[in-house]
Image (cartoon, helix red, strand yellow):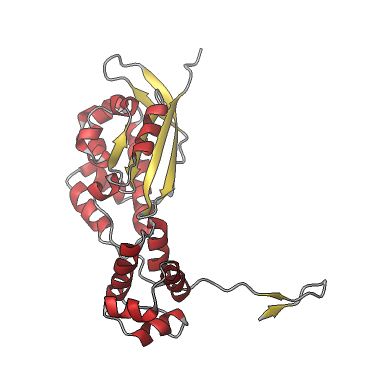
Length: 264
């Protein structure tokens, strides 16, 4: 519908993006006719026409995958475009990717960023608190966590963790309450049950989980970390950022811990 601004000139309302409009753009950019796309993918020409014209709005996953597979063979489709197409089709995935899949998202530039942060503690974690990649300062500050992979299993199952985290009880509570908040964002996902099954063997985890409290971030801006070799404790300012990956949006977090000057 046209919009009539105060000045009198008519401005046409911008169209809202749809699955069909994006499909047509991708097809036109590759100079593929509807008939050719239909023949190569086993989808009828009329169905593709209905999709592009908005008569049909929610194709099945198998149809979208067939269309994408052919179009990307002609010219690459970026991760962001793929995500956008599946989002518009109402097919955003609820499956949680494994550690290996998320690690494949950590590019060479991202790993270089870890090195640039030295001597600041820096790591990429998933939202289940698995360590995907970290720099030497992070690995040294939390001995054994990189090999364990799961920060939560290290936290509750390692005697070293209780020596490194001077305020272990408070820090453990932060992570458990935050895990509850993250799991609540995906009520249909299966991963929270898998994580709970792995951590149920630790009495302290069960105790803190049964508190029922929830958090969506740290309410403690600083963490007190002791050097296991010297016993010296440092205050570390902690920040955690969610990253918007093209393939796994919001699944990867960037942890930054800056050591603060010692009090006089």
